[in-house]
Every structure is written in C-alpha cells, then in structure tokens.
Image (cartoon, rainbow, N blue to C red; front, side, top):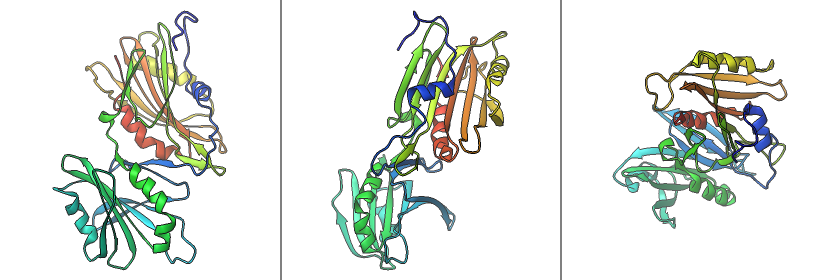
Length: 326
C-alpha cells in the first residue's frame, strides 16, 4: 500500500508495525505443526508440538533427531534420525548403511522421486526409511524406528514430517523487492504489511509456527525490513546513533559487531546487533542488521519471544545475507 500522498514522512517502529500487521498473540488451531531449521545441515521440517528435537554426535558424525511421545507400554519412544544432504550415486547407496543387518525389508509406495523402505533393523525394531533427491547426486532423508505399536500410532505424523523435509538455500528463495529494498524470504513465510512514501519504506514477514503456548496457541517470529533517511553526515555511525536513541529502557544490547551487507560496493558497511527486551514475563530477543548507502539507512530486524528465538535465528541469518538497498 503506497502512502506517498497521505503523509510526507513516516517513522517506522518495528514493534509497532509487528503488532499492527500480525499481532503478538498466537492463533488457535487443532494440532499445529511447528517449523524447525537445522543450521548445520540446512534441513528444515515440521513436527507436532510435543515431539522433541535433539542433537547428537556419534563416531564424529553430528545429526539431528526427533522423539515422539512415548506410547503406553513401550520401553522407549519412537525416534526419527535425519539424514543430511549427502553426495551419492543413488538413493540405494544412501539406504545401504541403514539396511545393513535388517530383515523383512520391503520397498514401500512413495511419491515420485522418493524411495521408501520398511524393515526390522538389526535390533529388531520396526523401521521406516525415506530418501529423496536433493538435486544432482545429492540425497536427504530420515529414518524412523520404534515399536510396531508406535509406528502405527504415529504413522500419519511421520508421513507429514517426511513430506516436509527440505534443504533451505537462501539463493533459492523468492526475491522480494519493495521501496528500494531487496531481500529473499522462504516461500512458507507470510508476506505482511508494506508501506512506502518518498523517503521511507517498510515490508514485513511472519514465520510459520515456531512453538506453542497454552495448548494450541502458536508462537511466530517476525521480520521487518525498513529504509529511512540518515541524519548528517549520513554515515553508518550517524545511523547507529539515531537507532541507539530510539531504544527503550527495557532493551539491552547484548552484541554489537561489524557487518558487510550483500553486494557491498566497498563503501557500504554496517553493524549486526543482538538485543534483549521486555520483562522477565514477556521477554523478547531480536537480531538487527543495519547499513547505509547514499544517505539512506537500511534496517533488517528479526524478533521473537525469548523461548522461541533460537528457532527463528537460523532463518534470520540466512535472510540477512540476502538483504540490500538498490
């Protein structure tokens, strides 16, 4: 929505615009799916709220895994080990390591481009293996194992998790251009309010659900990209000083370091900040990237409730590498 003829100048406040566009309260829904992005493997996936996401290392191999709520009567919980994108000549070669020592191996029906197997692993646990192409000679997937009862009970949730697995490369995300600003954002993120006039501009994004609160209420992350004039002498230090004066008394700067934005032409420099704000009951965390070009300042900020920020941050770091002023 353009507002050039209605107001000559707008001051863009991230917390106000976030509340205006999306609200800070979660939205209700039955059994929402939460989104997770692993920063090391770049694998993203969705999972039910009460499934735990963990991290482990074995024989020098680091990997992500999930555990489902334990089924009554089972000694252990069903687990899912993620298979990071890996180079191989075929899906069968990737599967070989998981099928070694297995019995009752059957290839299951799967969507085009996907190979799937059911089997009993070397310890006798029911297993499902799912592998698909990640482009060229690269493959990704997941291995689920647990009791037969747990496999049956969580079958639909496993199907949903397997189908959601994707490698997130920022260069593949849709490019967004507005008000002299450029950024790439995941297709799964909601596009929010856009405002502009002769000097200022703003566009917003909202993440998929990152966590839950009070049953099925979902917690999201919010991203704001804004542009505005910089006071004299129009450099990054003047811009940083202006932003510092705006910070509320409840905000604490935890980190401040130099940052070079995408497409920097040698004269473009910036800063990356990490902030905590709010009270102990309503704490939020945010990362903010700023730069200046030709007297215009660019702010890219990511914010979420403190207990969900770790899930937002990997997305923000990738998005920040794509933002720039035109």
